Amino acid sequence: MKTFLRLVGLTRPFAWWMLLAALIGFATIGSGIGLLMASAWLITTAALMPALSALQIGITGVRFFGISRGVIRYAERLMSHNTTFRILTRLRVWFYDAVEPLAPARLAAYRSADLLKRIVDDIQSLENIYARVLSPPVTAALVTLLMWFIVGHWSIQAAEGVLASQLVAGIAVPMLTARLARGTARGITALQGEQQVLAVDMVQGMSELRVFGMVGDYTARLREAEAKKLALQKRAAFIEGLHESLTGLAMNGAVIWILYSMLPLARSGAVNGVTLASVVFGVMASFEAFLPLTGSVQNIEADVRAGERLFEIIDAKPEVVPPAKPEPFPKSTGIEVKNLTFTYPGSDRPALDGVSFSVPPGSRTAIVGPSGAGKSTITSLMVRFWNPTQGTISIGGQNIDRLDPEALRRNIAVVSQKTYLFGQTIRENLLLAAPDATDEQLRQALTMSGLDSLQGRLDDWAGQHGMNLSGGEQQRLAIARMILQNAPVIVLDEATANLDAVTEEALLDTLHRTSQGRTVMAITHRLHHMERYDDIIVLYEGKVIERGSHEELLKLDGFYAGMWRLQHGEGNV
Ligand SMILES: Nc1ncnc2c1ncn2[C@@H]1O[C@H](COP(=O)(O)OP(=O)(O)OP(=O)(O)O)[C@@H](O)[C@H]1O
Image 1: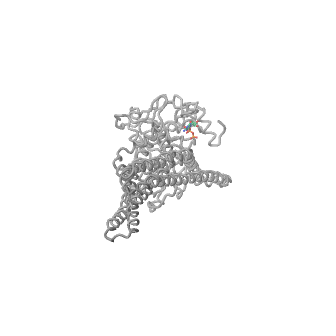
Image 2 (image 1 turned 90 degrees about the vertical axis):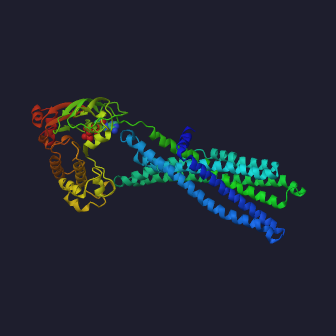
């Protein structure tokens, strides 16, 4: 209930639009009632063969309601869709604004297909709340009131019976079908989510599934989810049919009751037969207002579940909250890391444990160590994807938590081992780093990063995840982005890992050239050209265990020297 009220609360800015849509909906059904009543009047009056002029009013009525019903129905659809789409637009922007600060720390627990489902399907399903849950009951209530006055004008006894049937159709039947439908819509949503996650995994991991012969297994899981979903959908269709039948029964009950209570009046001459026929037809037409209630109640459970899934993300607290009054990004770009400690949520072992080091402005520092030593965690903390559990990172003497995170990220160019390329053109992928860059600047960046071959292909599609480019080209594009970003601090996080030796060598040279004069922090477990670094920090199990220049560390003959010898085929660690 709380979630439902919260969802309704979101529509407050559109309340008047929604009320207007409900009123136009009422006018549509009102026209339908008018049309049937006028038709009944016309047919029954014509049966008595009066002068043609006596039928004029009925003919005009049929024409008027016939046309108005179509026009008003169109206006109602236009209005309700317009209102719904405005609400959905607002919801999507609001959800995206809420999700962005959660990335990546708070989103780590969610699968991307699941998030996609939330932002697309869950929000879409809320359309139901606004178009089918809130409006139809208002329309049905107004129609009930209208029929009370119309029927009550001739017979209060008949009006009471009609009211009772309408309460059955408007309250009892929806409550019964809602009870029967419990769990159905929610189950369908859950299964759709499962299918989406499986489908995304299948498409993205098709090569792996093929290699490991698991395509059949995944297809079977998809089929199983489909079969379960189909069973639930059948049940939903059965309940919908039941709802319509019961509403029809309530309508027939109302008709029988009117005949029962008004026939004596017709016989006594208090009501004429023509009026009786019109009232009966009017009541039949009024039940149209109760049919949409099935959609309202059947889906409400799924809509509330969709709302819960959205609020779950929206209510998550971002890991990083920008300071109320951020300090400007410092001129000097020396980095000072003091007693840095960080434990990932759910982990019982710190990824970093009291790490301290400094990187003077314009110098190059390498952070080396075996896999899992905590090297990449330093990058995540530097760009404030996470906050340290203890300790600080400062740039130019300013604690980074005093800086605007966006300004911080603009001033630190990160080239990591996995470059994300968007399924757009090469130009658009480059402009991400410098939206105002000219073609000339883009070409220059391509040349500097050794990508002359892409000069004439700026408008070529990079492919899904950059699949139209080789691994080396993708990494070079990351370097071109770094050049365009023109940030004073550069973090290279295994920027050349996963590449063959020749490409790696060429890329290391390019990186060395293009990062001259900046403060560089290079994270690597492959020890190449280490003499190019002013300082090397050796990390092991989250702790700094050695520090010095390449020469000094070799002389020390400790862990680093062992790693170096091992990688250069000269012995064991
Ligand atoms: N998102 C995460 N959640 C929980 N634990 C994590 C997460 N990311 C990393 N870790 C753990 O933190 C430790 C340090 O990881 P980190 O990625 O910083 O190591 P690394 O030195 O960069 O390793 P590699 O060279 O393999 O990339 C590892 O034990 C890793 O399992």
